[in-house]
Length: 494
Ligand code: AMP
Ligand code: MG
Image (cartoon, rainbow, N blue to C red; front, side):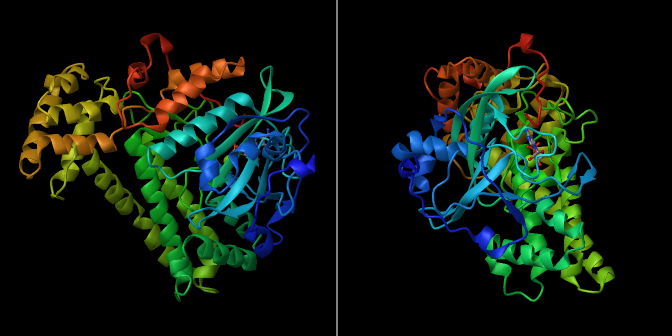
């Protein structure tokens, strides 16, 4: 069937430049490959022919059954701290890097399959993925992209035609995803843990050229590289928090060097504001809770910094540790800066005034214990700017205990800027989504999809692709879970 395979022009820099950082690997042939959903817009961004991709040759490629000439077909090596404990060898246990292509904008993008079969890194796992988690990653990644949060993208979800065993038999599936790269903090840790300093340097040089070429010529390039990754992560985590997103498994192998969100496992969005919100079944102590994500990002960056010590000041680890610790110590400042910048946008504030941080923080204090829907609140605040405070007040159990005073202060702050209320409110609506992947809607879509009905999935994806625009007939997608839905629990590694 090879004559039907899509023709793709690959440019595989990882294979070319980083021998010894991966193992050549092949997908397990799927008995009946079929493309379930293809992201046609993304295919076009990548310069790929969507019609060919959704045909039989495309299904072979997108399940890893057979790959076209020029593909890389490798499993990448990486290590990682999982829930704080170090695993020196993880790696792509059920994934393949198919290769890199240069997209229509001239950007280098990885095409990667998840669920394509066992590799040398599989340990006890079956190398496979089930339809539910594959569609979940597809949906959430595309929702994140529409929310303007840096993320890997979903190119396709395909069925393999065989069942995989989880709690019971489930349909086997493969996710084809696209990323700026699959370089992780854990990739650096793999080689640093083996004291392979030359390899860490080689990897850093590669990562610099690929993601931060502006520091390549600097004498202090490894320290500057660290700063770039720190800042990209500060921006990313601020955007997660501003959107109410909980990643759920911020292990160092799930933290990218590019600053894209990666590996949607047990993630979820909060309904009511709660810094302690945890959805993952295995996160018993709240390590990866909603409000703890900035702390964990800094912890992960400390692990990253450790891998760069020998590069920053060769032979003088004391100096290197001092410099890296200093840079790491600035993370909270950068994070707060990004968060406050985002909060000003959410609140429609143009000027930067000294009281803004308190104003933003005090809104969160007012929300505490009030069962306020986080996403709805910011749309309702735009309503208050337009002159109708009733819906914002209505979201609080008792607005008189704190919110009313906050709102008066906020409207006063707005009045100090020369901007028409309607223009301010319209700008706020462009920053505050009306539709996020509500947990009950995601579950409903995945349950029906598992039973062969894609209607709810398609509708949800359609709504989430335009999260800021009011869509007729989509009212229920803007609502929190019904009371009977109960606490939402998610599962990873599936
Ligand atoms: P993740 O939870 O997807 O970030 O994966 C963590 C590690 O477990 C990675 O090394 C994966 O490749 C590996 N892994 C997860 N699920 C499987 C599976 N079904 N088979 C083999 N390896 C797996
Ligand atoms: Mg992972």
